[in-house]
Figure 1 (cartoon, rainbow, N blue to C red):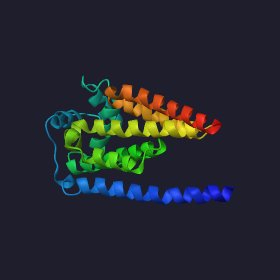
Figure 2: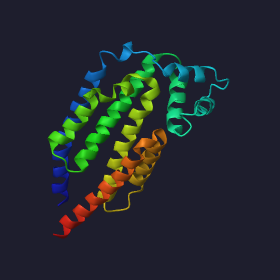
Figure 3: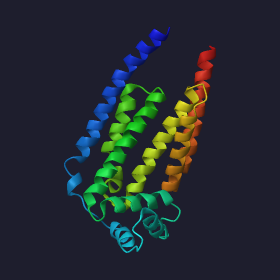
Length: 219
C-alpha cells in the first residue's frame, strides 16, 4: 500500500540523514582548525598573476585570460573555477579554501549517496567517503588553489554515478536525472581529463545495476 511505502521511506530517511550529518561533521572537523590559516602556494601565484593582470575583470574576461594558459586550455571548467574564485575573493585566500572545503563536502556526500544507491553495506557507504576525506594521499588538492579543480572533478564524478544510478532505478522518464548526469559528465570531463575512464565506468556500473534489478524483479 501507499502507506507502507511512505513508512519504509521514512524509516530509511532518518538513518540516511544521520549518516549525512556524521559525514558533514567529519569534513568540518578535518578543515576547521586550518582553513582560515592557509594561503597561496607554488603555481597559485602564476594563476593569480594571470587574472590580476587581466584588463577585463568580468568573469568572461578572467576566464578568457586563464584559458590562454597552455595547461588549462584542455580544462575549461578549471579555468572557469579559477576565474570565478578571483572574481569573488580577489587575493584573499580564505574564500578560496572555504569554497574548496564545501566542494570536498559535496564530493563526500555524493560518494555516500552513490554507494548507498548501489546497495553497499552501511560500513562501506559511510566509511569509504570518510576515509576519502581524511586521506593524506591528495593533500595538494586540499591546500593548493591551482589544484582545486581536482576536488571539483571528484565531486562531479561521484554526482554523475549517483545520477546514472537514479536514472536507471526510477523506471520512468526522468529528465531531471538525465540533465544532472549530463551536466556532471561535462563538468568532470572538462575539469580534468583523467576522469574520462571513470565516467565511462560509472555508466557501466549503473547499467549492470539496472540489469541486476531487472533480474531480481523477474525472479
